[in-house]
Image 1 (cartoon, rainbow, N blue to C red):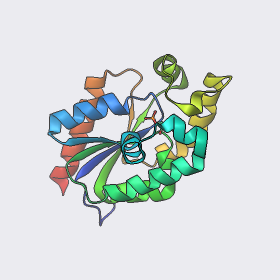
Image 2 (image 1 turned 90 degrees about the vertical axis):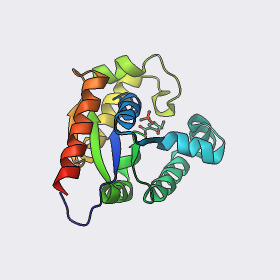
Image 3 (image 1 turned 60 degrees about the vertical axis):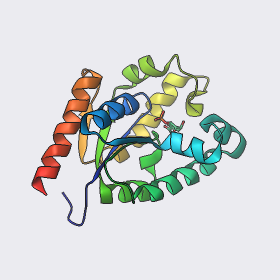
Length: 178
Ligand code: S3P
């Protein structure tokens, strides 16, 4: 682990549908941490939905709001942070999270992701003529960023409970080593 890091939070990164929200909530409950979702924080501060921001202002405007939220997280402790799927593509975001959080990447295959997201409609990037191809394309482009996490966990064959246990275990190991 790099020196100069003070890991008092956990950040979950990964593609849409990899389980960040359900795992994050369970980890927060188990560690008695707060739970914070960056998309929720953006919606709360703007009073708008993510889809509305994407549709009316465009993706770059949404990414700017994401970067602002990440900057504000540096003052937090004992928080499990679930991040939007595209957030770690901005190197500033990952660098900032790494100063205070153990960064855990949840990974899934495109098939499993599709199975989890196909009946949901709140993700503007999947409002596409061929959402399955879009998932494969975005996942491939983002893989190098997701792999920069401290811990990588494949969620395809594990239950939410098992993944959460792994996250808690890794965080405790990290805390014990400090
Ligand atoms: C996005 C993922 C979404 C949300 C926005 C863009 C992405 O979050 O931030 O729709 O770029 O992958 P989830 O990963 O929580 O679905």
